[in-house]
Image 1 (cartoon, helix red, strand yellow):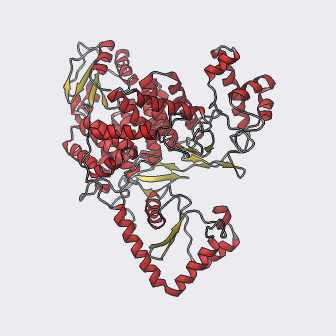
Image 2 (image 1 turned 45 degrees about the vertical axis):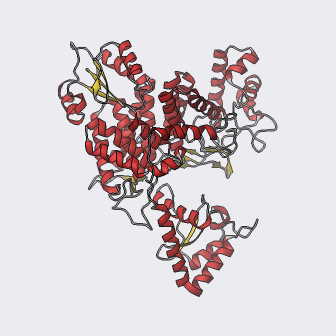
Image 3 (image 1 turned 180 degrees about the vertical axis):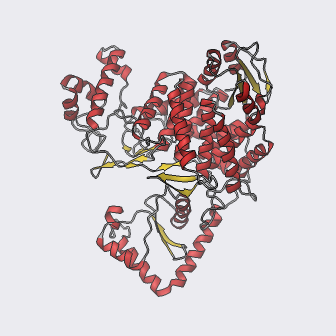
Length: 636
């Protein structure tokens, strides 16, 4: 529509004559987007982008739709006709249009403010969710449902939790099939790394080539978790490649992360990413070029509009090596050498545009991902990158006068009061970062921001968190988001944060608020559990038996680090990890985390305490005994 309508002289003249045109960046103003998308859905029965809404001067919506061509075609009204008709009706009877706007507001508000309790969540909800995931699973191609297919890795993360809880092999099978299929498909950038936003087909071959920070953050988390559960190195390798992409192409000089890379370059979607056999041969030479092209499905006829998206859908490195009688290690070295050359060549092309705004919420998710990867892979550099991003947000995306979190930073300017996602995802990131670095200041910041979130967003009447704060611009209504779409909801992340912080800080009030949070949305979750994967993770934490693991010892000593690494290696989604050093640092830990108070090194040696519901096993200094305790204790 930008090209067809808004850059068209005729349409522009009509709009400028009778309307004030406002273009909204839905990532900067998701509050506006959520509300007017709900309006569109209420009026038309469907939503999507581009979203076009006509409002009265009082901001009351009276006409909405998604894509409108310049002029009528395919039985779809065009902007020229719509703009002329609306302008005419406004001249004839503006009052009637205002009345329509009032009716639409009333209908939309009642829909958005429906009380979503009216149900009772229990452990049974987790089992029902699993059954529904199983029903929707695509056993041939992985993923859920039909095309287009989105990664929605939080669904896979829930299934990993469910597998660890129940041991049901089908849960892990669905995860592995999907992770493998997504990585082998064209949705993954096999030359420069990172995932595109979604696949337009059911085989994950043809992506919408846009790369989003949040997708890559969430997928990093899930591949790391899969590595911890299965101990398969391939999942760790994918996670590391995604991180390499983000740190290389999506990182600001200050350490925070950019939002996205466009799908288009030179006016064509995917042009930057596709190849012909001749291009590959020019870069690699005939022998290596033929090998690479055969492996990655690069043919004369092409697999995408006459060009080729490199993919491994029909083969794997292992089966290809066997068929070609090439030792697997040798093949891997040759393919990596080829990738490096192709990447260097591709870098000379005109790049897609980069959305270099820094969003607090999406950065929070990337901090979570880096912190998880740092722990599981024993890569301190990832924790350093996470800390640098966190420090940037805490310095530049908080209002100086009162510490109010802001949503967006770009070109030296921070703007827009933070939404619930900004608070919830950053608090999540800070909790994970504490467990990666054991710098207590990050946990303190998490506690403070969590308190501020409850003050600004909590609904005292019905529970749950509104999407925008009580101090923000008041729109038609104050919605609460609970459904997990491309990203999990802020309310779900907040529920998990509340549960974890209440146990870390012994705060009974936070525990009560967490219970109210789960109950506030019980109706929605029970009605369709798979739509609320992260809330299911919070339920799993609440109904399970979370563990508290305290490592008492000097963080600089080898034996302390060995105990920490033993814990970090394991998949422990419902465990809290605390480091209790000696001296002044230990005093500070005890003030914030009372659980650590009586957990001291035995005989001067680093010691591990594994507790469940605040009752602890005998402490140990032995690595194997610690591993046995973690396995036997149901920490999984």
